[in-house]
Amino acid sequence: MAKWMVAAKRADFDQIAKKYGISPVMARILRNRDLESDEEIRKFLYGTVKDLYDPLLMKDMEKAAGIIEVKIKQKKSIRVIGDYDVDGICASYLLLTGLRALGAKVDVVIPHRMKDGYGLNDNLIKEALEAGIDTVITCDNGIAAAPQIHMAKDNGMTVIVTDHHEVPYEETDGKRIYLIPPADAVVDPKQEDCGYPFKQICGAVVAGKLVSVLLRSAGDLGQKAKLQEELLVFGALATVCDVMELRDENRIIVKEGLRLMAGTFNLGLKALLMVNGIENMAAASGTLTPYHAGFVIGPCMNASGRLDTAERALALFDCREWSEAVNIAGDLKSLNDNRKMMTEQGVLEAVWQVENGGMKTDKVLVIYLPDCHESIAGIIAGRIREKYGKPAFVLTKGEEGIKGSGRSIECYSMYEEMTACRELFTKYGGHKMAAGLSLPDEASVDAFRTMLNDNCKLTEEDFQEVVHIDVAMPLAYADIGFVKGLALLEPFGVGNAKPVFARKNISLLSGRKLGKNRNVGKYKIAEEAGSRYEMVYFGDLEKFDGFLEERFGQAKLAALYGSGIEEGDAAISMVYYPDLNYYAGRESVQIVMRDYC
Image 1 (tube, rainbow, N blue to C red):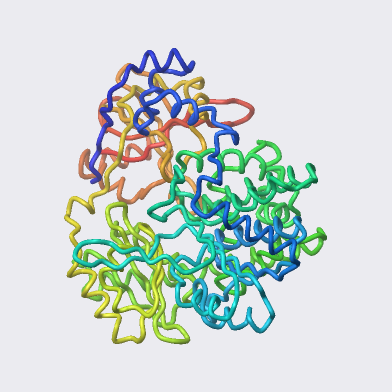
Image 2 (cartoon, rainbow, N blue to C red):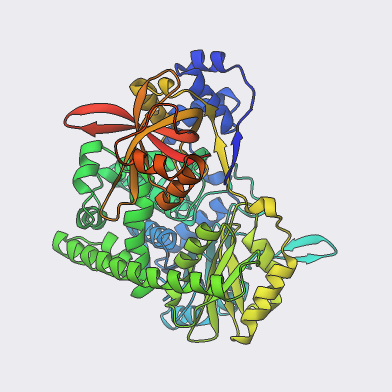
C-alpha cells in the first residue's frame, strides 16, 4: 500500500481566498505548491507571456546573439546541430526558422540515433568542415562535447552552444570542477555562474530565447509576431515532452503554447493533430492538454528519430504544402504504431529478466536486451521504473558496443550516480531523471550493474510510493462550481500535479466493469451523510477486487458487482479527485478514485 501524506502547510487561507477570489480549499492547494508571496500566486494563477524572464539574464546570451548577427551580415554559412528527440527537433526548428527569417545562410543537421548517437561527434564536425560551414550552433546538446568543440575551434570554426543539460564536472578532494566546453559562447542556464532565475527550462526554450533576442532588431512586425507564436508553441511541446516541471515560466509557456497550438498555422503540426484525430477537439475546446502533447504528438515525433530519421519530423514542421504535410504526418503515426508494438514486446522481456534473472533485490535495475531496438530503450526503462518504483536502465547491443537509456525516481539523481562510475563509459550524459550512455562491450554490463548497486544509498522508504494529498475533504464540497474552479490550476503535469483529496468511510453500493478488456471500474458510492455519487477507477482492478475480498469477503464482492450491497456494509477510505462528466447534454460531477485503503 502507498503511504498517504496530507499536506499541513500553514497560511491565512481565508485571506488568500478573499484576495484572489478563490475558495479556501484552492488557497490551500496553492500553498501546497510552495506558493507564498503575492507575486508567486498572481503569476501562477494569472501569469502571461509578459511574466517570462528576459533572455539576456542568461550567461553568454547577448554574446551569442552578437556573434550570430555579425555572421548573418557577413553571409557566413551557419549549421544548427540538434538532437533526435522532441526537444532537439523543436529547438532545431526554432533556430532554423528564426535564423532563416533574419536572412541567415543556415541549414540543420540532426544526428542519426544509430549512426551518430547523442550530440556532437567527430564525424559531424568533419562533415561541417567539408561542407565549408563557418559557424556551428548546437541546440539541446553541446555542453558535454568539449573534445569535438576543440576540434572545430582548432580548424577555425566558430561554435555557439545552446543547451539545458547538466554541466559535466570532475570531483577533486570533495570539490567540483565544472568542465565548460571551449565554445565562443555557451548558453546553458545550468552553468554555475549563470544568473538566469529559473534553471529548469528545456533545450527548445533556450534556443527560442536566443531567437527572441535576435528578433528584437527585426523590422517585419508581422513576421516577428508569427515567429514569437511559434516560439511558444514549440517551446510548450518540448517542455512537456522533455518532462520539465510545470512551474514558474514553464507553466506560462505551456499554458499559452498549448492554447496557440490548438489553432496553429503550422501545416505540419496541424496535419499531426489531424491524423491523430484531435484536430476537431482542439478547435472546439480552444486548447490542448499536456496529455495530447506528451502522449499523442510527441511520440509520433520521437518515432521518427527512433525508427527512421528525426529529420523527417523537422521536414514536417517546415512543410509549405498541405498534401506533403499530411503524407509525412501519416508516416510518423505509422512509425509510432510500430514503435508501440516493439515497446510492448521489449517490456515483457524486461519484466521476465527482473522476475527471473536475480534482480529482484537490486535497488537499481540494469537490464540488458541485446536484440531490442536501441531507440526504444528509454521508453522501456520508463515503463520498468513505473512498474517497480526503482531507477531503471535498459541496455541494448549497438553497432559499436553497448548503448542504453535510464529513467529515475525522484530521490535518485541519475546523472550524479553515473558520474561516480564514469570510468566505465565511452560516453554518457543527461540529468537527474533521465540519462543516456555507451559502454565499450558486453563485459561492462555486469560491472555497471554491480557498481551502481554497490554505490546506491537508497533506503526502503525511498521506494515506497507516497501519495501527497492536498486536503482531506468531503465529497459534498466537490460540486460543479468547485471542479470548474480547479481549471485555474491547469495545465497539470510534472511539478504541478492534479490536486487530490481524501475521505474516510465511503460506502460502495454497486459496481460494474467497463471497457473491451473490462479494466475500468464504475461504482455507485455514498458518503456518511447519505449523498450518492458516481465513481470510476482506472487502476489495477484485479488488485482492488483482491483487497475488497480480503476486507469484506467473497460474498460481498460478488454482491457489489451483482445485486448491490447496503450502505455501510463495505466502507473504504480513498484518495480521489473530482471531474466533470458530460452525458446526453447533462453535466455532473464524477469522482475518480486514485488510491484506497
